[in-house]
Image 1 (tube, rainbow, N blue to C red):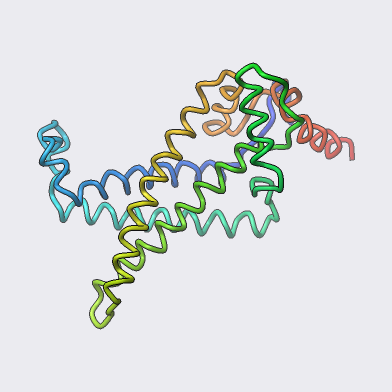
Image 2: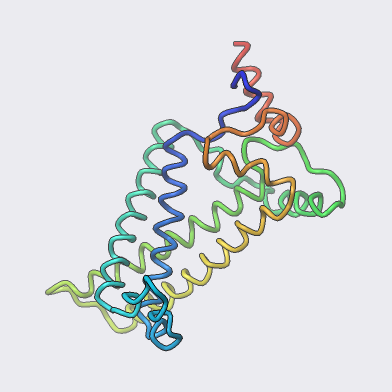
Length: 222
């Protein structure tokens, strides 16, 4: 709790992981597309400041650096929350059905069910993003180490790795668009300050995340 009517929702570690994943994923998508002749074909490299975007060696190096950053952030995320036994973001049974109820409520049809720290739709979105990031990491690792001396993979495995890597990228882009589109709804907008400052409005939490609010109240009174 906070005296100014705010509640701490995200620690510095959580915000570090969030923005590390966001920035590294953007760099991975941008540099990954740069491995194709897209930026030269569509004259992206003619834009001031992006003349390097069609340079294969530069985009490849950027891709590897961003990949290392992403893997570190993912590993930190898993270890940090495992040690603290914080698993409230993990999906629960019935989350898909409850997500539909929440979305309908935001569209003006019915009321939202009482929510914990994370809405059901946020837990589903987390699972979707996490699965596709894991897919990208595993397939990217295969695609990277095939270039090491003495390491040989079958053409079938490499084809699968490439196709799944590309599919993972498409799905991540879809996930990012859906994640950003969620803030079109006024009900979700109070969550935005939390990813920058770590705090959200107490009244918002009391009304929309009543289950979490009750737990916070019990913790204060104990």
